[in-house]
Each structure stands twice: as structure tokens, then as C-alpha cells.
Image (cartoon, rainbow, N blue to C red):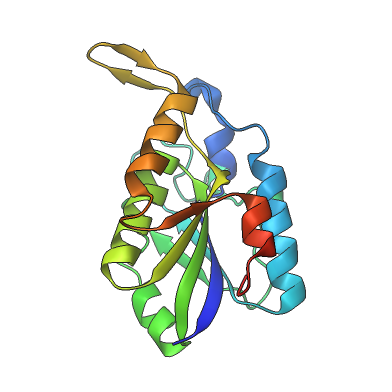
Length: 184
């Protein structure tokens, strides 16, 4: 296994619903994702998409709702695989792991939503399954979270999750670093 793939997680229109999710960090998220996509597509490298199929009746990510659709910056092209999931990890209930092995993909460059849920869970599993993971920190975003002690700002949630993943499950890189590294 030696190939590198771009893995885009849950870049769906419903995650723009601030009434449902609250305030989001990283206003440059979409721009950074678009830059990664452009580079991988121009290089002919694999681009893989994960789409959350929420089972919650009120979720904007439920199939059949406009929010279930991919954001314009991350719409799959014909031939780019889409892995549908109903839980946080892109490896649970999908054939993502089998696909990666079959295609000889050893390294994942990961971007998506949200840093503390589906991105974190997928990165943790990918690392534990033996894949090399580059998590593009500025091509991920999340939302503020309510804790028993009060509201935690989205930027703080984002930074803490990147810090807890770095070194054990992945290497956190910037979009610029991902674009400059060999293999991306």
C-alpha cells in the first residue's frame, strides 16, 4: 500500500444551519477544502467522500432534506466514491476500510466537519487501523459546545480536538503544508 487519498467527511449543506448547530469556527474552511480538492483532482489522486445519513427526524442531514446534499465546494465528481454512514465513524457500516486496502491506499489526507465528532472518530479509527493520517486542521471546523460549566467556543473545541489527535492518531497539518508535501 502506498497511495494517498483525500478523504472529505460530511461536507454537507445542513451543517450551515446555525439555528440547529450554533456558531461555527473557521470561516476559511470552504476555501481550504476547495484548494485541497483542486490539487488532488489535478494530480489524478483518489478523492473519497463521506456523507452522513442522519437517522434523527429533526436533523438537517437526514436523507431527503436539502441539508443532506454536499456543499458546492465539495460535490463529488462522477467516479469519486461516496461512503454513506449513519454514525460518527466513516469506517462503521461502510466498506471504506476494504476499499482503501483494495486500492492500495496507505495515507489519508483528511478534511471535513465536524472536528470533534465525525472527523475525530474517523481519524482515530484510521490511525488504529494502521493508516497514516494527515489531518488538515484548517480544512476542518466545528461548533460551540455547551458543557456543565458553560459554553465552550467553537475555536477552543476545535483546537483541543486537534491537539488530542496530533501525534497519536495523525499528523496535523495546514492546508498549505498538505499542498506542499510529497504524496498529496
